[in-house]
Image (cartoon, rainbow, N blue to C red; front, side, top):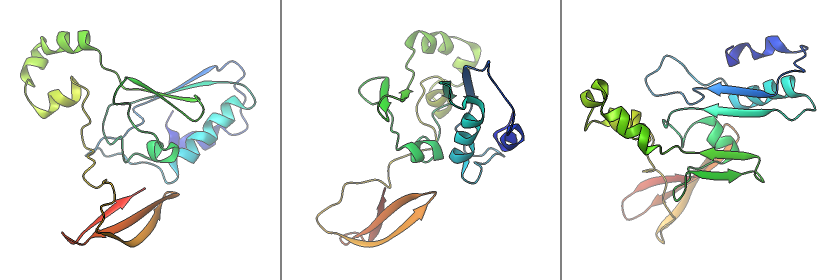
Length: 174
């Protein structure tokens, strides 16, 4: 089902459902898809509709595209594990795994398609599991010369923006 039709399930019972899988929860740039307004709330409402008072496992699966700017990472303040492949959040209720399967990568590189995309940005994304569209160019530690400039709220997240006087550039942090 699509998340946009989740409201249609209200009032239904799902006593035998023990696991939910949301595949491709990260939307890649250039797709004719978009995140719903208040998407995470809609998704959590769907989980509540299905689970009620039961423990239901939920898996969100996605490719490493837009991980720093997707609404799920922002809502739960998630970040990728850099020194390990697993990181826990929210008192161990959220487990984030960033897959690094070397055996799969090597096998994929030997395929015709793997050879076709060898040494390209698509190989980095599809085979090496590198983040496709995100960068942290807009995230920096506050320098001594930075002065508060303005703040804005987007999807319940507050971003504080400062101007770096030496270069006249605004930097925003969550």
